[in-house]
Length: 311
Image (cartoon, rainbow, N blue to C red; front, side, top):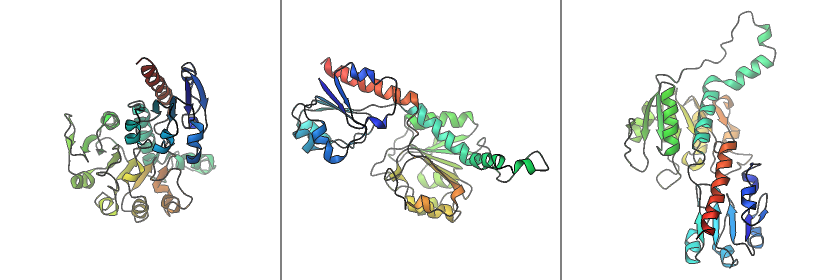
């Protein structure tokens, strides 16, 4: 059985890729361009993709194809309707990155609140060595304890972030863009009150018609001037030009962003043009990608192939 992984570089050097090799004749491509897909999957029974699009045309040109394994949760890069009509199974992986995303959410939050990079640079620059007192209070920070921590999207990751926020002593509330009511101890708020009263807003919702461009300039204007915004979910939920404008206008205190509408971002992206750069922390879509999460991901991809073979 021929197995082709179209963009293996997206999972990096994980220790269990040999699980895939044990299941068939495995070909790993670091990355694949759109016009290379059909040629590279020729003769394959199983195709693995993280972000490379598998179109109807590619499927129709590959009569051997029986299973598409998405090495991620979202399946928007596969033409699901075409796969169904052609009798090709599509399997994704859920829940592998919950702890990783939650941890990175707080890494970004704490780096933003505590000005970690600033203080590290201050000491290493030698300025601290010239101080007359033991401390330097160049950038004040506040505690999470006692603050209102808002979760936008209370799925598995959102609930894990909520648990950690409570451990810090925060009051956790949530907003559900889908309107779903959860059986949880956290108070559900409507969007206006949610944005107006939260000290921290952390986004953990899927990108959908209900969430696309949800956080725009008008809604950022509802937030406290001392509040911070975190997004480790999907870039399209936040209007990026509006957020850059709001930060430069001191509308909110800061933001930490791991996801973008287009990835990688362009060199002219609004976030890179920010005047008040210290108010924004950026990461290149890494929250999902702890070593453990990537290892779990590939283990479950292998399991999906094993289940297919057992049918």
